Length: 193
Image (cartoon, rainbow, N blue to C red; front, side, top):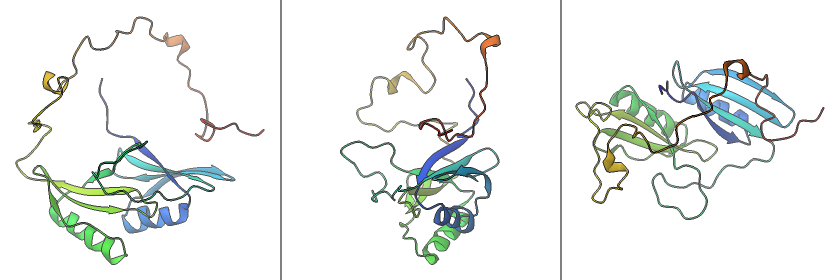
């Protein structure tokens, strides 16, 4: 299978106005799509020419309690943080200064070996990282596993391992591949007619 990136990350906000102000006006991500109705909105911001971050706005949604990036957590949790790649060290430092000037607390620049990162939070409490790749440390070309006790599955290699999942024996026939219309608002809730 060939993937083309992350088409969009779908996040949640209770305040689309402050979300637009942060993602579009402060970070500079274009607002490229949006739809909604009473009590519901879904807006998309352009990360680059192929990837977006989207927000559902639901009445009553509240900002999450801040959890430091990478800090262990007990109990139900969906993800730790979002990391955005930056073009250069200079661009990352400029963004750090811009965030701090706007009143958003940022970490120091952290050296992870293959990337250098700055951490912050958006107005919804979403932990975000901005990082640039360190020259000469391309983990896509030269994968590295630094784990003193790696899982057996991790030691099997970087590529997909055949035979680990059942093969498809009953694919959807072309004649039955239908695409239904919709705006995304009715996936998980009953729409009123």
